[in-house]
Length: 285
Image (cartoon, rainbow, N blue to C red; front, side, top):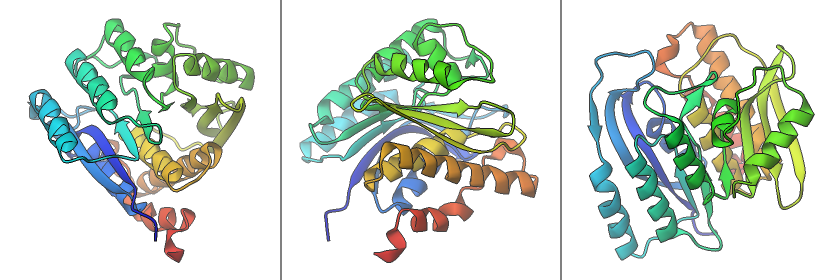
């Protein structure tokens, strides 16, 4: 049996409201991958729709954690960053990438900072420029369409989109540095929603769509990126990993919608984990 693969996930922890590490850890782990975590902050809940939440910043702990891991000789098959709350965290995560990057491993950046045409209230355009710099060190980035606009310093465009526009956007994002790009929130008509992917080394573009489900659901970006990485580290192609992630995320949303769960609480990805195991072929091992 081959050696178990290992990911370092650099995200915050929200105690309630499924997102960030409480999503990444179980999804990547169930994909058969050892998941080590560097928590950037600890919150009682995520910040979307909740008030009065607690927040403990862990910026001062990031470098010591990384240096201790390096002293132990640890290596990682992938480094995976998500929500980062400050310029200082951008700088530190960039250092962590440099510390653990090898010719063989994968750096995935989910540039969490914006949605629905606007930056989150915590961020400004200078932060977006800093995130673009971090993305230049990635092998693959997973922005939504709003984040793509800010990374490229372009005006956000409302959908519906066309394949020519999405294809040009993917190539512009790859020009920032990452060889592969997966763009979420892609739709050509109201009936379907999904993602597009682009591999700069081959010039290939792919699209993965699923039936649109009404509503806005917190944490779906983390669900998507974690499933995508799970596919890639299990040997799936970029296109197949993108479809896997779209299907897994759509299923999670559908269960949540049908149950009428408060959308602030996150999506029911847990019930889809057995199917993810099957799709990855891990039920045969």
